[in-house]
Length: 214
Image (cartoon, rainbow, N blue to C red; front, side, top):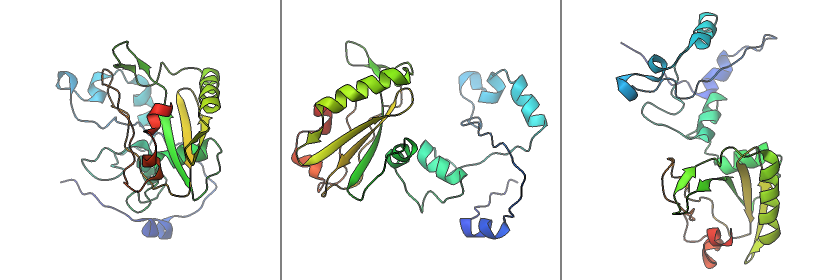
């Protein structure tokens, strides 16, 4: 039968050997999914001549970034791919996104990653990524928001555009607790959700819910 081995980072460090050779690591996210439409897997459904050609010249494998049966977000999944134990190093997606756009974080920062989305007149989400708007339009929208929302009570608000539909919001204050709930419904056609602080100690709870300022 199949044998699965979890190798920790200390063992990997002792086994790895530095060389001058380079590789291309191609991660086909979700390609190992179970059958769904027409009782076929993704690979059985798709036309894959290019993947077949790549596979014939490569070393292939299937990996569970966290553990079998767990579908992680891209944050912990990337940490796992880079050799870090995502259960040991729990870094939020907002922090990764903020660092990715070159922001400098302080111990007083609560970093959040956001997507622009499009809604119907009834308030139902029709596109979770707003059609992947141009980065230039993203920058204009973020500037409008930043000009209007500089502070929530004692908390400084810093809004920075990313690529296409992505952006980062930093809440900066001395009494902020980590953790906000996910506002992404994960499906088109879902109703709007609002991010809420996990901790009752979070300074943001002293004011109106953050989404009202946006």
